Length: 171
Image 1 (cartoon, rainbow, N blue to C red):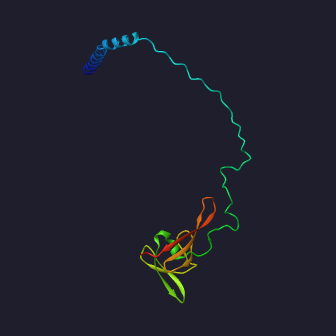
Image 2: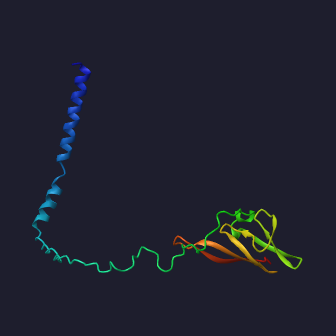
Image 3: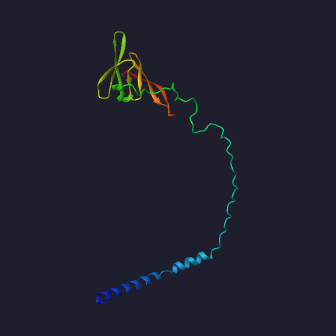
């Protein structure tokens, strides 16, 4: 072996001996504490809790309606309300109803027309029968202060319902 390797090996052995000697000192306090704990009287162990026997349950509601099926009349029959997927969409159906604003009316030839402003500032003329909003909202009537609309919205049970809505003249 080389002298430097032999020297580093002796240094490592010397450091190991010092570390082992350092660990053995100072255990007197630990041994004294252990002795004190052993002198204490032992505690009483509480008994395990009583195990109750299993009681079986007989399900007797199998002949009743399932709680996971919709209750009441179904709104999915042939006469049920449904959005018309075949009709051409009108321009104002591209805007949510809450972003449209009624700004006035016009009366031409005894007939009221509503004026609706979109969020981009353009004003559009509408009449009963036109569609507005994203939920198939059909305009049913126009008065000088309000445009009445009927929307077709999902009912949460797989069908659709008609919901009234309106746009009021802004002050």
